[in-house]
Image 1 (tube, rainbow, N blue to C red):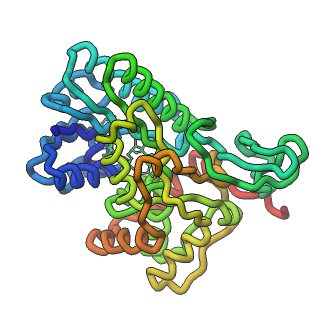
Image 2 (cartoon, rainbow, N blue to C red; image 1 turned 120 degrees about the vertical axis):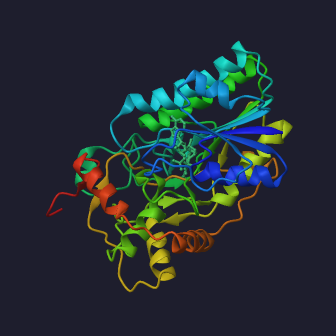
Length: 372
Ligand SMILES: NC(=O)c1ccc[n+]([C@@H]2O[C@H](COP(=O)([O-])OP(=O)(O)OC[C@H]3O[C@@H](n4cnc5c(N)ncnc54)[C@H](O)[C@@H]3O)[C@@H](O)[C@H]2O)c1
């Protein structure tokens, strides 16, 4: 198969490219090399036999050049950020995806499979159980609640503490512009794919971690931030009280999910959660990174929080497991593989401090009220 990978110069995309090549496929990449991910605006180390198209998924002509000869498309390019530029999520993620299908239909292109990247962000605040009132999908925590440092959501009926549980595919409820754009991405892709006979699947990735996460990308997650702080002699910053629960996922497992749904006949027309299966708190993660780096310091848990963060969220992966997929990566492996990669590419620029300052200046990072 000849596969076009959009965002193929990025974190997940570059690993998908390698995996496709190793299976004997030929590959093209469409990537605009956005500055947030590629500060030098240059191509990373991509195997020479990959056709590179530097272009934007919002541009018709760029898609058309990139789609030449494609049998399948893995659409990973997306806008991701914590800033308040809401319209940009829709422009890049939704208009970009709609444009792909527009061109496939307009030119009757012989693409026989599409996989689009969605996100766990479609679950908003996640799913919870109340002992008295059953399943709950809480709204975003209020500013007043966060300012008091009352981190956990409570039952909307009786205000009892809620117990978090795994989110399954049937109940998306996004609470930010990124999550909304990802749900719309899926909706365009699955609906237009079904309507126009273009077999399509969507993958709702949990937080994917591993080598090649751009140290310059503030959105690329907690491991990059922890390692960045520690490398620059600071304590890793942990928001809230660090007890937030997540299902961090090894990049190898994200790639194997893409490979599976790209070819599995029963994957067509569906969205699948892709999560690591093991639940970890942010504080456990910070301590594991400190221990792996031999740093004799404590995480910095200073009552800061990020507006828009979810408290607990993890994904129920029963649907993709039924197709034979299993996550295999452990937290220790994620950390080990990332550190091995960054050892060869030391972080010269202090990107982590810059990202922190940018989020503080933008009002994304705030401090719990003093005296509470
Ligand atoms: N990494 C995660 O934890 C995670 C979690 C959930 C969902 N996802 C989704 O997976 C996909 C890949 O994420 P990633 O972590 O590899 O991100 P990344 O930022 O490392 O890579 C994205 C790539 O897309 C390119 N790109 C961005 N905008 C573009 C545009 N308009 N036109 C063309 N190229 C553009 C960037 O230059 C970059 O190389 C995204 O759709 C993301 O929303 C990722």
